[in-house]
Length: 286
Image (cartoon, rainbow, N blue to C red; front, side, top):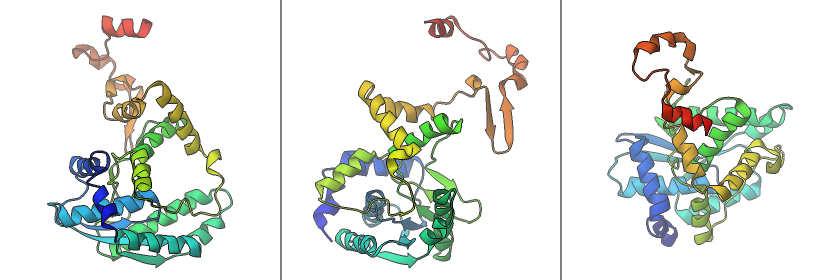
């Protein structure tokens, strides 16, 4: 293991990576005493950094938990598999590799191979975690993934939603957590370059070029917006933390739907409800 790589997380990148990692863990209660976590490593930069942060928290933090560093091989090429093993050794991550034929199964699906692949991978990760006695699985999604998901939902899905920091599985007694939730991708890339590390990219051989994907379009849109307003990422993130239900036409929670007309007239008796102020009117006009 290269100690300088390990130490860089709490040294050079303490503010932008380690502090934000700790903040996410604490703010969203992602890791708690007694947890047993399946740390899911795809071999990319995000999941490898996540594994290092969890490993360091396990060793030096005040939370008492255990971890399994899991690599699910969906059908990697020999080159990609060797790269994952080499990087794990370099980073001192004690990985366990499990062989599957998920890429092969997904490739048979003509219309939506990516959807099937994601579903098969997620299902396998939940099932394997449960078999290992883990109550949580950790995935390497970061802050940019969250922002992109919000915009994709609005622009392509006709809905307001976000990528949550943790979720309950519907079919397994396992939670999904995202420890890199507050960490920006640019800082992960800087950490990678600072330590002269090289990780595998998307290893799927059936998907189209990233440039044609909707997520790639969102990435390009965000680059354009940042050029005008550097704070746009945080504004988008804060927008799903500051939702005013009184200003939504309709919303649903589970199977229950609500429309603003359902109790519109009842709101007349409640001060400030369903009414506008001079300030609001001016904002709408000007």
